[in-house]
Length: 344
Image (tube, rainbow, N blue to C red; front, side, top):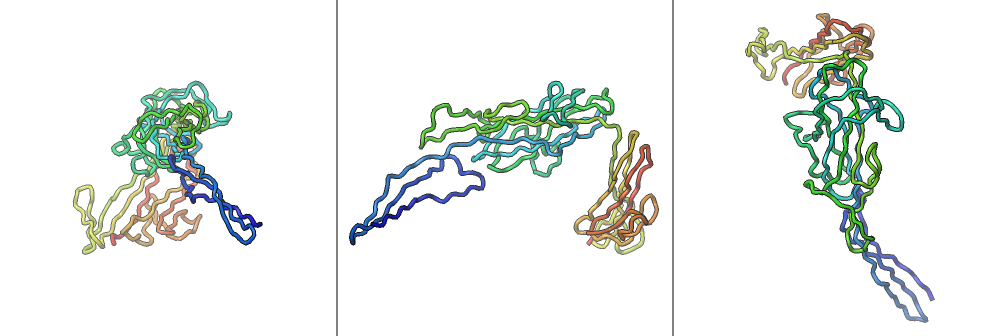
């Protein structure tokens, strides 16, 4: 007698975890021959429904404090929230000042807290560009986030004017899982039932939240530093394709059409006292324009396009202008860069 066993299992997709409510069926079959007669039998079918798994992760994005100056309004720190569960979920957000001197495994940089900011608010990155934009990023909760997806969240805080260089303020973002749209969730309390979808809190503990509470949190910090570098970029002139006259954009008298040559100006300015290291300025040439060869000047001195450091520490490679200034001792004079591009 030959006996062959078969397990019949459904095929599943695991990219985001099997969605809750998915019913999984399983039965076993046996085939055999007795004498010259072939026969087969099947077992009963076992059915169960996949539970709703609630899990999330909140992380600070840089691993370093955000440098700010005294009196700075709307200073921004950045976090990521990832849905580690198996269904779309919403998240409520809470931004708070950390208590005392918190630590993450006793390691800097988020373990020193010696001033308080004001007006902490968490805002969701509406267009996923990683840049806080006050007129766009106005939502203060995440209405829906798919499994395995990540959303950027900003804490925005005002820095008091009374602080001094070297002081640090630690803030905390806490995300609490909700249903899509914001309704509160409750973990199932009864024993698991095969065909009932239970809600299971599977999250790990965060800095202040416990495990299995549908929450997670992370720290970030603002570090006062009176040494700052600021960049500004303007169009200082436009030369029309049909003539040599250079027009002044400040007067509104411009000819921005194909063939016109634009002169851009970048100004790097410095404030405070100290040393800035590894200063590198990069500027990709805008789309639909073409760089004018050998048009770069730095503080009025013509530069080459070649990568010929230390001749002039300026280069044009891969459609990008790069100016390497290295170490700058501040106070320092502004660095003024100009270059030209033609509208295609």
